[in-house]
Length: 166
Image (cartoon, rainbow, N blue to C red):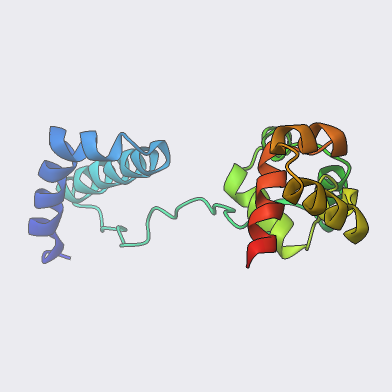
């Protein structure tokens, strides 16, 4: 155990240096782990100075398990509810706030579960409606007017026109 003394001394000095603590202070979970490790180290150094056998190991402080994956944080029922509510028209950002996950996680979850947006143009316009819209556009009807007539956005009209040209 005497071989650990120089290591313990160097750790004792480096743990309390301000740059190291500042670096760990950005992550509370790491700062807590560092604090527990420093306390264990102080205890062991004191025990060793009093002549007691050392009990320190590299695994003295075990990190608390973090659950990061969405699949681990949400049940299948919750995922089904998210998909169902999205398909009924609930915006993604509201779902993300309610379930406490990121917008990116919601997008990935919906993509993985093949969720369809009920407001997609293909769900609201038949192929016949699209052909009629394109015929009216070619006849000179402005895009904004077509958007109002068919109850879709100007962007959707522009996309349909652009897709018809290819």
